[in-house]
Image 1 (tube, rainbow, N blue to C red):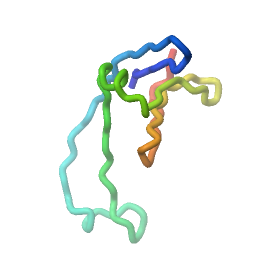
Image 2: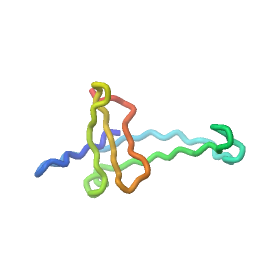
Image 3: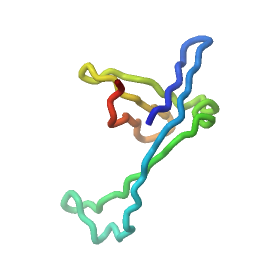
Amino acid sequence: MTVQRDQGVGSRTVEQSRVSVVPTKDTSGARQKGVVGRPRQQGKVYAMTQQEAEDAPDVITGTILICNVSADVLFDPGATHSFVSSNPLK
């Protein structure tokens, strides 16, 4: 993911995101078990185009430092999760 938006006064930069998705076979959650007693949950992937990132005032993107490594991050106050890229920035 490489969507970035600078929230500073008068400046705004956005780069287009890139997301790869591998389709999985849909099976019943009742048959798949992860933690004992809990059905496995199917993951979801969300992507934003450059235009969507520019038009979404409630979504905040940026870069954070984790153990001295920069990473892209996407915060959506209306979502149940926030997202951090697994690829460190160089």
